[in-house]
Image (cartoon, rainbow, N blue to C red; front, side, top):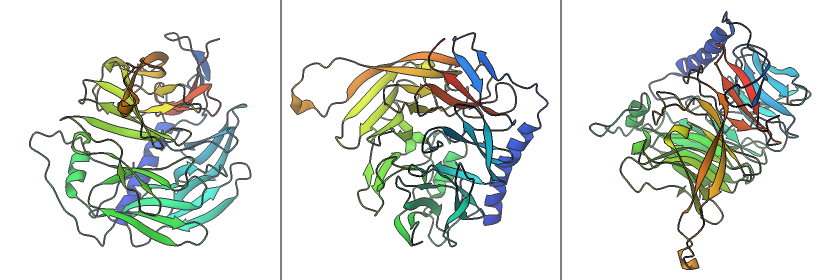
Length: 415
């Protein structure tokens, strides 16, 4: 995610954004041989296709909606801008030219929202017409931590507030800093969560905190539901929070119960009813994919083996399957033998017959892992970031297994 602080000037912040695109361009200039456009993975028997044509192309982050409203097109980044891939014909069309930061495709219109020069725009995926959506607050640090609500009436954003006061803190002795996470968490910078009415341009600041706010998402179905995290070394934060767009209803979704427990990489299910997240009790020892139902408060935890854990998960449109992108030697749980794209089949354990008075207990099950793609040659400094296609028949991911970054899809059914 793109990060800012009071020590980073606006000019340097946008330099960092340009650097990301520079890295993509460097990949595009790789001299590696052209990757195949289609093959059967010899280790799994699943069919894999390459969706992108330009080296240095990449799919969006795993929780960013990237599909057209009719589910026929996928938005990807390329070194030259933003393009769509027709999921039936595999035809590629450039929609936006230049170094811009994609946000999400709108759930209602399917237009791709993106940032360029502190302004949010939206581009039509069919006509390629571009409209100005809103200017971002000029008195806040620039940030791409912005999204669009379910009915596309409101932008929601998180930024460092240069007018606020930092409340620094110290990392506990012996705590892993988590790379850049620890020092940034310790700064205790003043942050603000805000909304912008797309029709009127009215801005409203609904929440402030010296906790590091990040990983912002809006419900895919409820226009008034926001989810965000308290970022930092995961073992130090109660990470997953929800709030209404009017600033009410602040709620912690998962409260830790043991030392070293971590929860994160949260995302909404397609129906907006369930929040799913990686849960480890404690870190690196016991692994779960955990779910919390926003309507009923019911919790479901699916257990999985250490060597079948993934950095990111996603859920199929019908909620019946999960996918994961495996992990590398420097992933949060330092897994072994996990360089795979996975398909997970959930199985709930039978209940004990306890009376309904105990209905608040966690439902427990297991995830049966099926390997889809061998990523033994993938460098996990690039996160594959899996997502299901709208028809639920493919899993899309990005990979550098052939050198340059490309976008691929693996078919769930075997021929």
